Image (tube, rainbow, N blue to C red; front, side, top):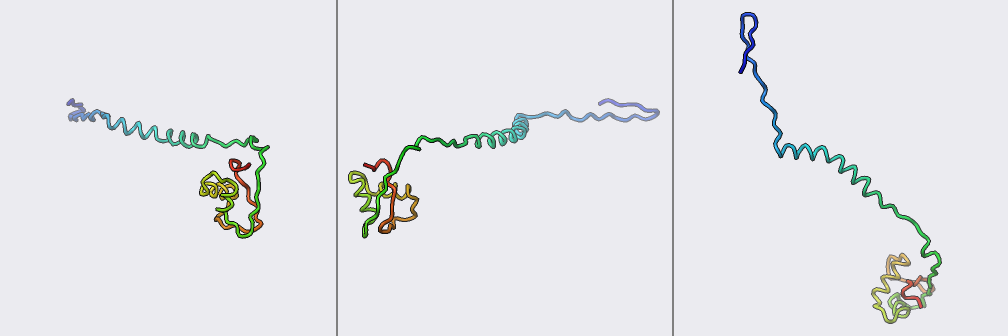
Length: 118
């Protein structure tokens, strides 16, 4: 240590210890600096996949069938697609017609998915 002498008195000079940044400290500071940049990149990157409407299926017409009295959706599925699994046909008809349940009424018009149309 050094000392500074003033008129008549000596004051010791105390040096502050050098600040050392360890590897872990560098990693922490780098992470803190990069976190906002990563958050901004994710915010803009995840919103970049906008949907685009097209008219590819504009010329497609659906086939509709009318539910007969006493006919269930299962029977209708067997009628329109005899070679297919009725469970899949019923699920496709429910999805296409946006039905909450398999309950159908006589005279109800239902759209048939294109893969089961004749």
